[in-house]
Length: 87
Figure 1 (cartoon, rainbow, N blue to C red):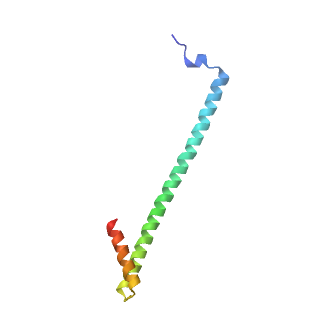
Figure 2: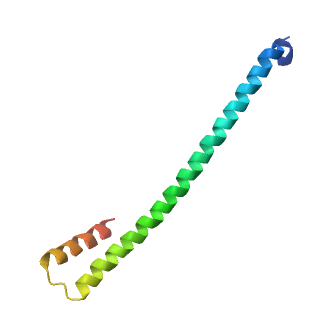
Figure 3: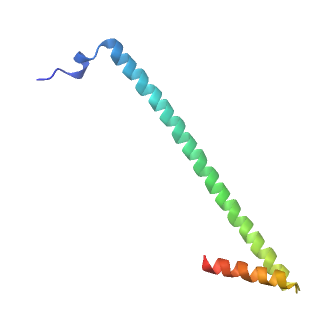
């Protein structure tokens, strides 16, 4: 029968393993923190992009409604509408 793990590993080796495990736990906590920060930043940027898209769409719509007769604006507005329909 095999001896228990504690009997096989010398005290010095055991302490080194414990230090290594603690260092890895600290690194893991740091990585988890970085992932959480990135996730929050992503959510914030997504919300900001949605707000900007609404602003742009409202600006283009109001420009077209209030008498913009320039063909470039009209065709640009139509292509943006088509892109949003395709999405």
